[in-house]
Amino acid sequence: ENLEQTGPAIFMPVKESRSCTHDGPGMENPMKRKLAAFALLTTVSLSLSACSDDSGSGNASGEGTSSSQSTAAFNDADVTFAQQMIPHHEQAIEMAQMAETRASSAEVKTIAQEIEAAQGPEIQTLEGWLEEWGEDAPSGEMDHGDMNHGSGDDSGMSGMMDEMQMEDLMSESGADFDRMFLQMMIEHHEGAVDMAETEVQDGENADAIAMAEKVISDQQSEIDRMKKLLGS
Image (cartoon, rainbow, N blue to C red):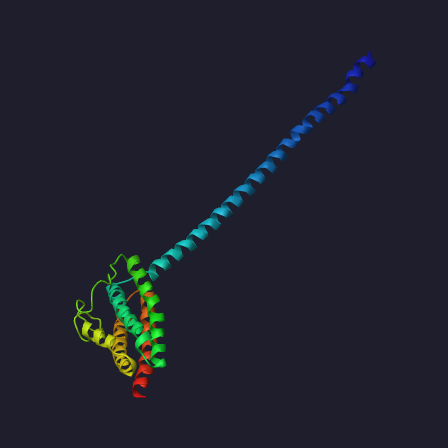
């Protein structure tokens, strides 16, 4: 009887051992949950970091857009400068092209070529600005008489030649052409410098002001050269 009573006591530890074996997997569940939570937190952290980077990029882009818009700002003086400098440059190019076949001085021909090379691209730039600003560009269909050119007139385009002056220049050749070309182009350039100085003083658009400053520098240099040629 004593053996039978102690028998169950001998097998009790075995049952407890099975219970511990059964609890083993249960012990792993909290660890798995911790690992899963850690992975989730890492993913969220990376996502937030990416969003922060994107937000920073957006701000940088926004600042760039604001800066671009500021640079593109313009006023009435900018529009007037562009609208008047286009026909002014066109007439200078017309005069310069006459020199190709009528001038006898190599120096005069060189200056004429430089004028055409510089002012042609500037016309295209001015026309592009007017289009961007939603303003009308000169049609180029007016003749010299219709535009009422001349120094000190109400058009504001100082130094422009009238139709008769252009016809007189066209009729000359050789040394007479050289002399008339230089006289007329000096006056024409001086008018362009006046217009450019007005733009520098009253304009708002940074690019237009920069072009005006270039016109002043380039054309004043050409004026000095042409005056020397006249005096030689």
